[in-house]
Length: 416
Image 1 (cartoon, rainbow, N blue to C red):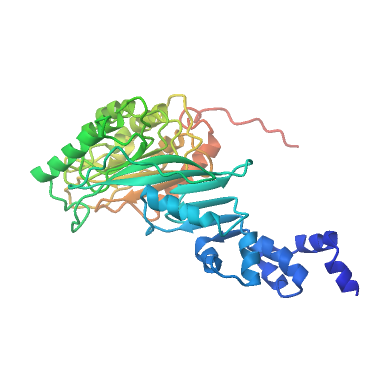
Image 2: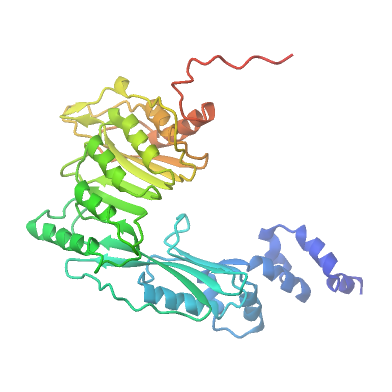
């Protein structure tokens, strides 16, 4: 009788369950029906779509309780279609089975910070949907601009699009033939992207994939401006032909100040021409151009004309920070080499590079990664050491100007 009174007293039930750690809630499910209804609301509040879909068509009592308890769903998949029609149809079918759903999102991986689409329930009871479709350009396909937009009752849809250059299958990243036919494909895509009467006005992201492209053509695409068209705020270009610091500076002046993703990697045929001893200039270009960056990837070469760049000639940024990149989540530095000697070892200047990266002014949760794409041995755990060193320098000098503060007087001793 006393136990029954506990079960029927909501305040006592709540106090008991508040003392149970979440990972032990499954033990509570089998104790008593009142405990089941209370515990399932915690266990099933946030679930993956792989779990939630098992109960969509089920009519048994437990399944109904599970579906009513779900508040947040995460869909992780790279195989689901990325076109707008298919994605909106999927989202619409997701709403009805889960009446108390507050948020759902789709990602390519759990680690990814970017969502393909996001569904949120507003205070008015409607669902706000932010969906990004994918427009794939191939040698045979150019999309039509006039696309009929499908609307759904109870959904406030905000659309955007990502353009992806798609080349025929090849044996490897750098085995795409740079032929006349290949050049014609790029020219055809450029005509589409630079024509306001044909280009989709919702394009806000560009991925050139494995297509070799020069920085001049990239500049034309990124510099496109026309009334009614969204600016491109995400650029992923993994196969850019070699360019120097001056070309990089001119290119960055064309891009939007609101850029949030910038990936500029080199294809190996023409090679990387950004020298390691120009890293201070490269960092200054990025900090002065893109204060809202969340992801940055760029490349540097440690050797040019067959000779290594001396490690004692790496300059450090010495100017005040005008824009700190507090939104930055990850910085990736790709290392290339045009070395032709016999000793394939290079004492990578971790501290000098780390001091320059600290100048970006990113937050303490930012991850710094070094990817060695050369045949030269740079050392053991260099990427991990670089990440540690950048954060250490940021703690020593929050403004990033390590060299400037090197001769500062230490704080006075105030101990007993």
